[in-house]
Amino acid sequence: MSAPDAQRLRADTPAAQAGIHLNNASAALMPAAVARAMQDYLHDESVLGHHAAAERHAAALHAVQSDLARLLGTAQSVECFDTVSRAMALLLDAIPWRPGDRLLIARHEWGAVIAAAGQLAVNCGVIVQDIPAAAPTRIDRDWLQHHVDDRVRAICVPLHTAAGGDACLTVDLPRPPGCLVFGDAAQALGQMPFALDRSGYDVVVGTARKWLRGPRGISFAGFSPAGHALLERARWLASAPQAAAVTSDYTRLLRIGLGAAARYALEQSIDAVQARVLALAGRLAAGLRTLDGIELLHAGAPRSGIVAFTAGGRESALVQALARDGIRVALIEQRYHPGLFQDLGVAHAVRMSAHVYNTEHEIDHALARTATALAG
Ligand SMILES: Cc1ncc(COP(=O)(O)O)c(C=O)c1O
Image (cartoon, rainbow, N blue to C red):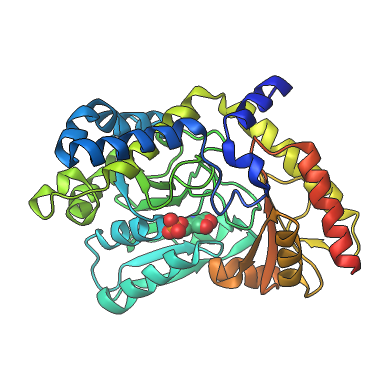
């Protein structure tokens, strides 16, 4: 990404002036266009009422699903939910499980998905099994080759984790007919190229608030033709207009924000976004590696904007010290990715995550303050 483009994206981001935001993997900063779309909608709701506002913004509301489909690279329809965790739970639950069916889950899967699978084991007699890791964030394909049989109905492999590591944007897994592959794209969409229809995934769930820079509280799922049948089964529980048989309510304001975020993302070159994010994260990782007492969770260059590390037991103190300096980073915990943290042998870690509007100067300042905090 050229320097002027990076400056333009930063100028589009009012909150970038409010401190150094290196917590984009938790929630990134909204571009002004997204905030404006929501402010306009809320204004119209307050002066016209709910129905007239929805009529006035009907075109934008209608476009959300097709813009999301373009963003996901799918010809199938896309649906909105509230959180990623609930969307995954709901969609997994929509599979017509029989006792003894098997659900295989990557070791580095998101904790809430593992918890949802646990419920299926209790309520439906599903046999839930870890797919062993060939390396942290990499599934053991040989194991799958030997352990997949006709009872496997679903396989869960996240596209990227909250703690960085490898990204898995395409899957070509051994599986029986009818077995669906689920992908958690919360940490992938918006920072790396992805095309659902060429990915091998059947169900992919993303969120507005992270790399897509949309509002909190809304997520979405895209489907392969095989995965799409699930949506029909799950729809009545989703926060969807099509759920009108059960409820006529859904969150129009957040949809407006998500749609604006999707359009904003589609206007940028995702390759240029990825290149900038990787350059910033590479600078962070290289600087952190020079500091005593810091161990990065993953070797080599970062594969995304996420850089996670331990700091000799002083992780929480470091996050707080940086916050006092106006630098926002995250403390990430084992419950986020229990299997991955176990494989890495850590209980928690500091995560710094850079997005396009961060600057080299911000990275260098965060590194300098980290060095000072650790020396103190
Ligand atoms: C990899 C991954 N999956 C899922 C989620 C959860 O998203 P939600 O809070 O929308 O359930 C997160 C949030 O940090 C995440 O990092």
